[in-house]
Figure 1 (cartoon, helix red, strand yellow):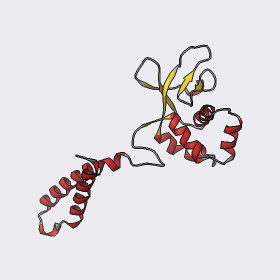
Figure 2 (cartoon, rainbow, N blue to C red):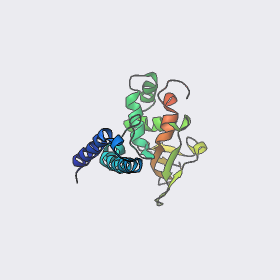
Figure 3 (cartoon, one colour):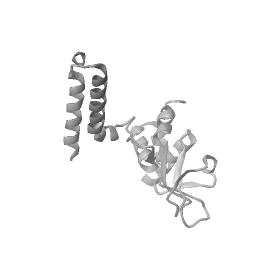
Figure 4 (cartoon, helix red, strand yellow):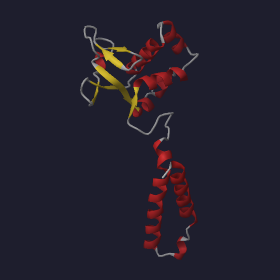
Length: 174
């Protein structure tokens, strides 16, 4: 079933919940009807719920750091913060790396995979900028002496972005 049909069925179930004639039913039947229609409504609206954005973010716990960095660069374009990132960087990748450091320094936890492991783990916050450095547009963390990334597939939790949103946009502390 395609998403539009599913959304239509969900909308119909939502309207049915609103228009049901509860006074004409016994309480247990009304509760059962409401629960059934509520489940159908949630199932129908799931394609929308799944893509709901909280400050522009999808409904998943981890977000790719390079996309989040690009998003914050876009949001802060033509501000002193973006101008500083542009002046201190000579490529788009380095601008995104700068935003990766900015986020890490303002309370956002960075997560990544240690190749070849498929598991996501938190990157030690104190190591970012000291022994670990962003590369490739904030998509990897490298140690200077290594020939491969120490962490790849970098990501952040959207809860951290919400918690630190003011600081990340350069509007003061949380």
